[in-house]
Length: 342
Image (tube, rainbow, N blue to C red; front, top):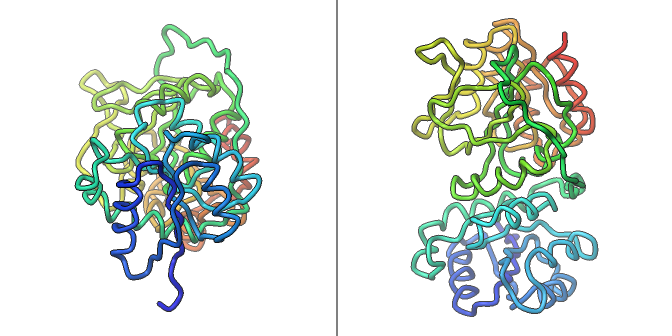
């Protein structure tokens, strides 16, 4: 291609800016047009250089990464891929994704330049995908403490909501789960494009704000009413019955179609009481799983293409006639409730 993806690298460590720059420019389609040592300098250079995307560290002097995200999204909007070693801090990962970064990628252990090349392809792919998002649909999610009281013995759910997304999905999902009515006779499970390293901290912090209890989907865990379970789409997740007849999760090896795998298993387990939801994301995963949900008498919902940050997932399912309801992002919670209560 003639036109290269223009990237600004923001990190206070000189060796890291060089390592990231060398890593990115090893791909012939990427050009690093500048580096910055903190958020304030990064904000200035965004306005001067007009990059297509930036990589952003969190722990920096003068203006840290979270402060920088807030300013960038208002003053000089540009897709942001966070590259940080602070993934174990739930407040930071949750806040960055809530504010609308395209992705939060964990720096390899020790954050040393030799290690970072292990994650080369993931970082390069994120940069390229970030340049193609519908940036106008990225918005910060306003949250407040939920004040939720979790039931002591919730029992098993009558319905299961299975939700799929990929890149840019956490922001949309946070918005959905802060709006979704509680007290329903249902459980939910979502596969997010999020590093397994980041997931536990993200879930712990998110649990403070969601209307439902938020938990990690773990192998063998019995599914309870009123809980939304999250797992990384790096793994395969299926819904099965335990030896006692309770619905539970099985966590397996990676698969090319993690959403189809989850949706099909949910349809086979909960049948007409399964509700499939596709949010923003890339690729065509989920369409065949939607078909199985419909075959078993369940219902499917897709976020409207116009409201997606990245429309491929929903567009693919819509074009294949696998979708019962097409809904704007702002009405997703309402649509899910209507199907659970039908």
